[in-house]
Image (cartoon, rainbow, N blue to C red; front, side, top):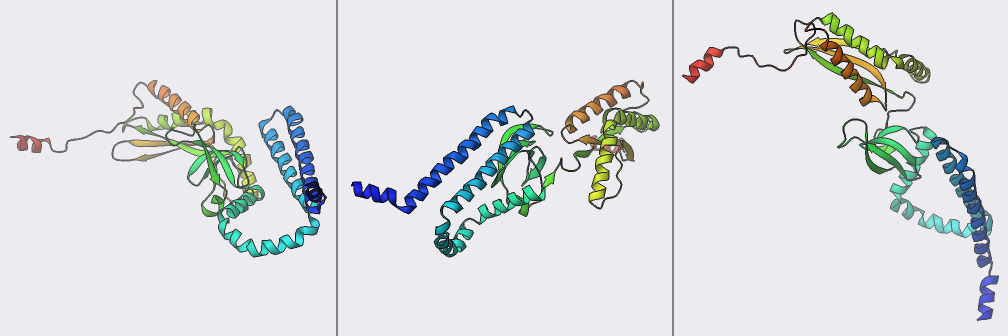
Length: 298
């Protein structure tokens, strides 16, 4: 029995495995020490996340290098085996390979980053983490109105970036154009209505005009885009029931619902002080020929 143990421990493969295990323990021990000691001093969430991901990535690279160094004389045989099994592995793991390729595209192509609000595969939310195979998203919407979290965490395969459009609400231009529509009765003071909406838009959403213009200029330098109006704008259209005013404005992608609520509150309060000069409209029914109903009732 002693001779077998001696043979086992003296075998080159056993020694290489032992060296590899010791090297892995030392490598990842240092990584964990670094993460616990140094990362605890980083208060910013984004910087803490990036430092943790970077340290883990470095640990993975060091692990691969250590395996190559320890088993460098055995790699020739592994190459032949991998060549035979390569086609079968590629077919069986095509989704995994696609997700890994998607991860490379996300990281190096700048599709999105942690903290961005995106829509992937029909799921809308904020990116929590970008893994090698899946992206973790805190979902918004669904049974919750507006752009608010619903508490559901969704894991989405990275291969989706090759199959469906990727909507990024907070990339190079972290603003959205939004609109509110106000129905006004015929005979109201249309000029005053337009003035009320323009004033509310400038006071509540107008502070983003300068910021958004600078971001838009950078986009124009990077892509082929026309000039866009970033100031609040009012338009109107007449239909069968009322005159519909539309206030178009820019808003931060995270404050769309709050801004709309503030705008509606301001507009409603101001219109109520006009003493009937501006009146809201509602759906009404008009009897064109009431005599016909009387005859049918007789």
